[in-house]
Image 1: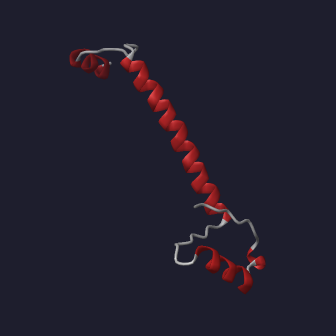
Image 2: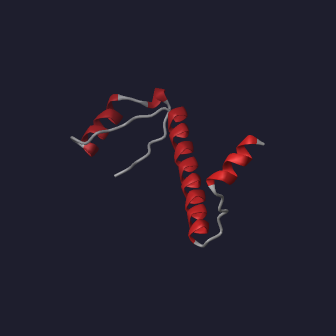
Image 3: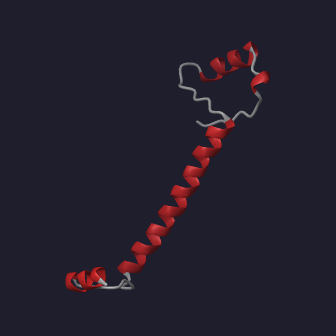
Length: 80
C-alpha cells in the first residue's frame, strides 16, 4: 500500500504521528523530504523512458533493422 501525505514540517504533531501509527501499525513507513521525493520520482521517469527506448531498439533488432558489421570493419572504423 502506498500513500502520500503532503504537509509542512510545522504541521507535524503528536496527533498525526499517532494516526500514522494506528493506520500502519507494524508496517514500515518511509518519510521523504519533497526534494528527495522529487528526485526519486525523476529517477523512475528516466528509468521508464530508458526502458521503453531500449525495448524499441531490441524490437528493431529482432525485426532485422540493425546494422551488421564484422570485427574487421569495426577495427577499421576505430582506426579512422
